[in-house]
Length: 396
Ligand SMILES: *Cc1c(COP(=O)(O)O)cnc(C)c1O
Image: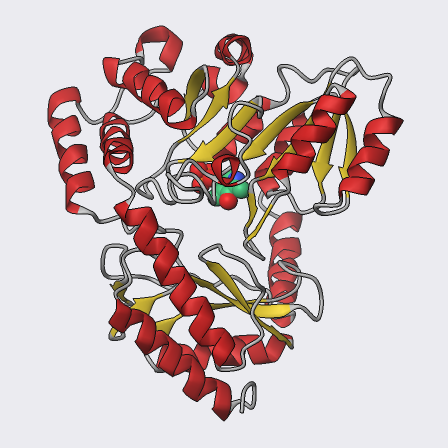
């Protein structure tokens, strides 16, 4: 009987609309790339995808996906431990371990699942997880599934983390969990300091490098390479759905026994279908591509530097940093959304972020630079920002 709940949902949805928090989905009529077509509109420059290396529609990646589908079929219709493991799954796990310089890797359907399954098997009631206040929703949910005590430390605050490590000394194991890069500000976790504290207080470290794997660090190994902590992090989770091709899939990579134990106990691994052969084949090709040379991450780095420098020179208030996530601070919620609308009219697709995604009074436009952007694309976007910025009184 669909009764009371229908009325409640209508009211709740109305409230979401009234408060301006309703999420509308813009429909694309093209593949993902630097230039996209929006249904019912013209082509626009895309500055809001996680397509950091431009691999989402890269010919090498599409070719590898097609070849893998021809050779290995479309799907497995099975979980890994029944009859869902192909040679490709083992190869991808090995290749990912080599890429991240870890001992072993386990695949998941998404990084959301990896984070959902990485805590609960190890972290029982006599343990403690120390988690950054700004960690991704999937880490928060993964921790909720574990019986461990949860201590939230202030964002990137090492003094607070240390205090919480002192408070939790009686726990059987402690695990510090952090994003490698935080998606709203593009800031990088202080992984050196975190690993030092972990050594001092006998704690494990887990890093979710979804916004870093493939491009951050000198050879694109992620925030772990950028912060020079490769080999010191016990568990790394990451996604294949951002820089590494953008389709879907994720993994946990790290200590041999921990990965082996996850294969026995991790529920999103045990009770969910194995990764599609085409995602496996394409991700293998991506890792090959990124291991051969650093051309794509180098281009992303210089694109990011160029965009950040030009925007700063024009007087925009951007959060300093090196990440291709470039938050253009506007503070005012309405201004952020008006500015994004005006940018779209000029053919540049960017998104305004406001409360509750970011704190009240901290509204912004979050630009994401890609290796797929040409110099002309970047200049077009910067020029549009200049003209809209002046029009709205954000810059002079
Ligand atoms: C995007 C993201 C995820 C989710 O990855 P999916 O593979 O899309 O499920 C998890 N953690 C972080 C930090 C992310 O940015």
